[in-house]
Amino acid sequence: MTKNLFFLKQVFILCFGLLLGNNFVSAVSMPVTQITTYTQPSTMSTYVGTDGQTYNWGSGDEVVLDTFTAGGNIYSPASVADNIVVRRVDNPHVAGERCSLFVEHNVSSDYNLETSLECNLAEVMSGRVINRGWLDVFSNDKRGSTTRSEGNIERIDFVFTNGLIAPSSSSDLAATGFIITEKSGNNPTVMAVITGIDGSGNPSSYAPLIKVEEGGAIDYGSTGRSFDSSFLHDGNSSATQDEKPIFISGLPETMEMAFITLDDLGISLGQTIYGFSYFSQDVYDNTQPNNVASGMDTVDFTTFPTDTSGTGTVADADMYGGVAGYFSLVQEILGKAYVDSNANSIQDNGEENLSNISVGLYADTNGNGSLDSGETKVASTETNANGEYGFNVGSNADYLVIIDINDSDLSSDLHILGNSILSVSVTSSNVADIDFRFSELDTDGDTIPDSIDIDDDNDGILDSVECRETSNGFPEDLIQSAFHATFLRTAAGYSVSGENGQ
Image (cartoon, rainbow, N blue to C red; front, side, top):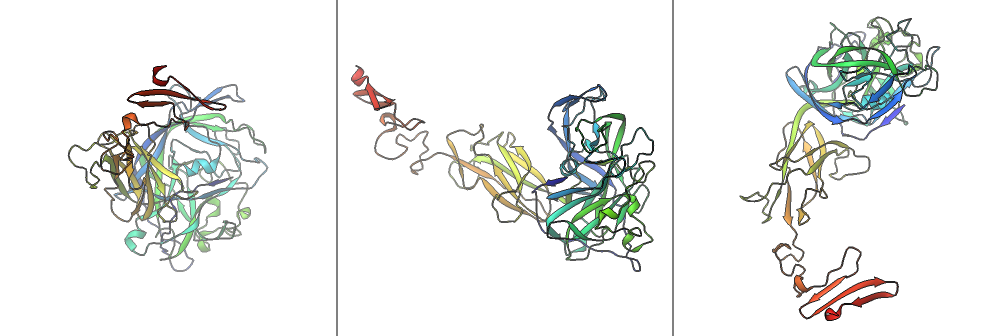
């Protein structure tokens, strides 16, 4: 199962901190203590499950992660993995791609689910929707439990195909990294940075494994958010699933999150990396080189156990969506849209603010200042009553801000001055005055707007008596002081009627 995204691609730098001896990573705790979110509409769908219950998806809004706070700093995604691959190995219990979700439900029913239905794990992980996630991610065998869902997932790869190059300062190393989320924060998750990929984009080498666990060197923190959740899985564990998961159980669950900084993850200055992977806990052994259990190879996921227990805390980590990003200190892009009647690049007194105009934020993945194929919209907004807009963005990244010049709230008499696509490079501070200026149409360039120009094409014929083409390219009316005729298109050409009122 693969998800290809093209968000903010850029090259970053990470740092390696190794202990002497067996190359164990020395990590510090960066629990997340607060998040900010916004909502987006969900897609409605309905089905009757094999249990006879009617499941109503899209009953509310999807909650989207915007920023988080860790160590007193605020972070935002600067880039997102463009290739997410779920590595599966079929086992005696499960084959195929079984759907196992936990989803916020409406308070009125366990079967009214707030988010859109999504049974593609790569999609769940790649998006920033956090009121849903994947249940018992690495469990192969639920061992008789009726509340857990077994699967065949052995590794999840978050690949940045073009590479990330690490920052050169220690302060930046301590302010960039990746996240792990867990429902209630009571199950461990293992992560490693991908240090090489092959010609097909598959991981070919890894940094040492690190583990996030409750009370461990890297611990989860409470985000302050809780969701009343339904736990669901596909009732069919064979190779053919119907993507109609049914209810197992449900509980209110808190969202726990850890921010793992680059110096925690074992990457040296200037080293190129290619993302990260999640592993089950039974691949981890801190008595072995690189923390990899004996007989296992992090590159070859077929060497991992396929009987990982789904009971206790070995493999039943429950991960929220929205984890595919590379996060750095939050910055803002700020600007406005207004009428610049005198084209002096300043909004003078009386010049109109343009409200309710759509503005989109895109990743400029190659930093060339142009919107290229595959460069995807990261966020969108509308200008407010003062014509202002803003985006929270990650630092050290390139973006494109694009205004919709065909927005229905823009007067047809207005045209943009300059470019509707503005290139913005964000470093370590906010970027302001990314403004879009408009002016009334002036077809003949005589500085008199068409709306008040009596001859707006400057052909010597007053607009009031000039024959104009209609939208289909053919004239319909000709008006002059002493002559009136109507031209109608026919198969042979035109027919003329009404000459001089006849």
